[in-house]
Image 1 (cartoon, rainbow, N blue to C red):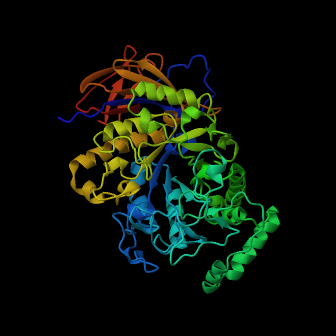
Image 2 (cartoon, helix red, strand yellow):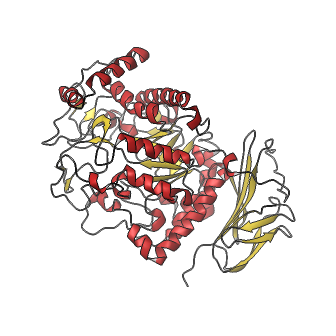
Image 3 (cartoon, one colour):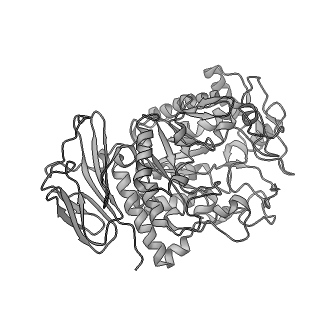
Length: 562
């Protein structure tokens, strides 16, 4: 019999109360009231984020699969495959994300991409991934329409799910036959970055033929003729120019390249209520630009809230998480360029993507959990990291052969910090596709057909769903303090509290099938009645222990309803 890792999660309900003393927390009692789901505070530092490639997730509108004559042959997995915004919305409406306990969705950029294709040594490629912008003010029809993006945000918000928009400030798309370079005052075409220090990381092109926006410049530039002609042909030239005039009059910024793009990006926040940005290639831009982006995004978010008071989820401020490639949580607040250290948390970012967990995942559970609890309650206190184990451009993911999907779920969803579920993590989608070159192997289409037909995929998904839903109900998992209660079997606690809210959980891992007893003394009082949501059975704490007898190797317990 295939052995699943056994998880016992014992949780105390959410209660509105005074903060617990830091010295010793009183044990919970069976008389504590179970809070309603809508009373659970949303915390970005404990979020369960689902990250997907828009073109590779779900095809909701097959009729929009080909635009701009994008029909040339490409390398394996390097052309458009049909995924779109409508497909994401379909899965929101079906409850797929809700069932996974997802409370934020991050999808790759959907602004209009370069129309042509290019071969950069990895096979002929179109901009299916969304990182090759041509016009920040329009959506690419391969991904969908403005109305479809608006509907996606509305449907997500209707389920309490936040939307993270992926934004690119530092580069345009590559130069192709169909897509000339932006004018020289806007971009540089050389030198290529060598990453030796701050200068050779920021004032350079990320790779050959990827024009780098002069984001450090304060010199005013005029709009490219091609962009003006495009807007005119689309009947929106006057509107775009008028809006730019209002923006520059209000802010007083010079008409330098980065300020145009900041205006265009924050328009999506102002118009649609986008909850946050995932910022691409953050270390390739002078950090002051991120402060400015955050300032304008915050202004736009508050403006949207004023215009849509009935649609506001809560008072959570605008959020930015940055991709500072190579950053690890062990580095604390700073990233070291060699000749200079930068604290991105001082420049608009509440969180950075953590590139360390994929390596840490080979260690023991307690070593992993203790490490991140310590970091997030010391150097990074009040901030956060976004943990992942596989991603779209990391060629060295944890478990590339997908042989450990249950451990992957345990590590990712139970490690302190926010979790980034990469599409297909929860279904063990293959990360090794024959014939692909480079990161294309990480970007196959979502394996819906396997999920529909293979029981083993369904079992993996069920495990991720149960852990994910538990995580979303309990901020203590991602934002709480970790403490080991027992080594054998391995049992630990998490506790989170602020001025008006307290959450406490106990988790056990690697427990035996059948009868199992977990030490919970000092955390749960005698007589506390608990329900195992995995087996839908109840137990009562006796002698400082919670005892179960189930055939499952996974158990999730919560305070039983009174």
